[in-house]
Amino acid sequence: MPLRQRLVGVGTMTAAGLGALVLWSAVALTRTPDHDHLRVGRLPGGPEVTYDLQGPGVWLLVVSIGLAVIFAVGVAVVERRTVTRTRRAVDDVALPLAPRHIMDATRGVYAGPVTVTVLIPAHNEEGCLADTLRSLHSQEPPPERVIVVADNCTDATVDIARAEGAEVFETRGNTHKKAGALNQALREVLVGLGDNDLVMVMDADTTLDPGFLAGVKRRMTLDRALMAVGGLFYGEDGAGLRGQFQRNEYMRYQRELKRRRGRVFVLTGTATAFRARALREVAAHRGTVLPGVPGDVYDVIALTEDNELTIALKCLGALMISPAECTVVTEVMPTWRTLWNQRLRWQRGALENLGAYGPRPATMRYWAQQLGIGYGVFALGGYVLLMVVLVATSPSWVWFPFWMGVGGVFVIERVVTVWKGGWAARLLALALFPELFYAMFLNLVHIKGIWDLARAKEAAWTHLAAPTREEAR
Image (cartoon, rainbow, N blue to C red):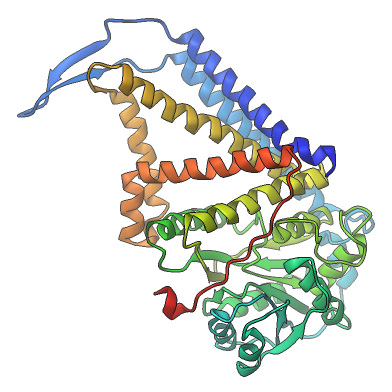
């Protein structure tokens, strides 16, 4: 493993730690000892309470808000400049998928109606494949082709695929998991596809909402510079409290993307449609400006192939979105162990992708995101530690009106952002502390990913065999 990849996680955490240290220094310098700030009062008709009216100093607020504004504005400016540069670019060598170049190259050329060929990579997916295929066939309009990429299957996946009317592509000698299986299929599928022919890759445990393919075709028909359309995913029902944590998390991600008008962070592997031209350009640039083996669409070394392909397309100047009308239902992890394995792969894969690409204009947003996650580890850890110390050292419970007000605003934000999820989602957000402990769980995953990467530990690609819908209920 290259040294650059091993250091990327440690570097981001070090930078985040320095930011936390700056804020802590501001607290230490502005906080003046005061032993007379505690007050005792009595609630109307209730018991006596001890409270502290002292809030943070003005300079602490200024420093805290200033750091947040500087970071947010800095990220926004860099991202805006990168997007603007890409959209105005005319260099078909450095940015062959830039919108301006694509528009010039296709002006006056009719490439036919938009068609969709769906690839479904499947390894022992007999439990959920039938539902996935039926959701595809119920689309209006349905896809022109549906191909199940059966990878080293030992169950009834192939038989179910054929029974549901799908074509089957069986891999040969593949040892590179999902990415390797898709590369084999794409070498055959991409031959002869035109500029308006799409390849949609979707997971075998995903079902499309009505109107998904209609939205994809409409977007691709109206904008010939658009290279990929991703889906907005939300979690399926079930899995108790663990499932609700994940559904709330996905709803907030959806909300954030909608506020960004579909400007995507990651083209999700649950369901994303690509122009054939975009995939061919990625394959042509592997081994030169992009990491990977020449001729492969997917980098078989990457743990998170969807995140890596997103970065690859952005490095080539591609325009991509995840619009509000393209939604899918995906599985949630049913146990803490499977959730840990899934998120560890996501986090480790994201860090390795940054190490492989290094600092480029197209990756600055991702570097900032990792820095923010690292800072969150320090912030949440410090918050919990402070609460424990306060409870252990105080002779009685002390109420802090200022911080209760801040916490109230935070709770309102948590509830509002999952409001569409129903009462189960709202009540979980209102309770606050369960979701804070879930955030701590994700922080531990982040730390474990950095630790494994720094030690060059071999990464494992885990597979969860999905149960049938009836079994899940």
